[in-house]
Image (tube, rainbow over all chains, first blue to last red; front, side):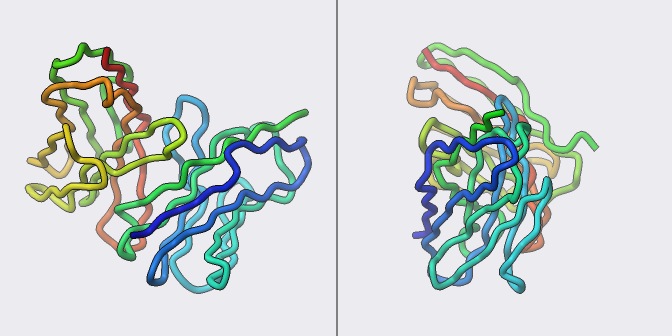
Length: 114
Length: 113
């Protein structure tokens, strides 16, 4: 069975600092990988997704993620964090090679200090 | 387009009561899903549907029923609510292409006393 691990429950960074959120997955075949963001009291918004091809994926709001098969990782990065980036971030893998039945990690809550 | 809409936004039930969480989408998406979100556990798939008349179980289906009579609607039914079903429920939809994006509704916060 597939699984996703987000080892950091809570991260605090200063505004303007760089950010990296970790995600490790377990999946037998080529995974479909996603990063979603959830602001307080809101639904989930897709930041970016990886299906195949270039392992460095660009997303919305200045985020990017790199797929590393050898490390089973799909870490999310942003070079300069803004206060509005404070939210909870979820990594997910598509089950059975689809984008429909998603398995989510437990999330990382990002706090941004001014 | 309104996207994925869910009603109600908040609901409080007593143990044993029944209710239906509504989900609708106006994007003509074939796939629809229900997830629940619990603290420290991320989102878990309850039920999903690949089209009208077709539903299947996800990771945590017990205590929930679904049906899909139209493309637009995918209601989630709790026949006899239990405190363990206190959670935030999200509905999602997407096109049938293997790489299409899944869109989430705003969620329903359910408390069972």
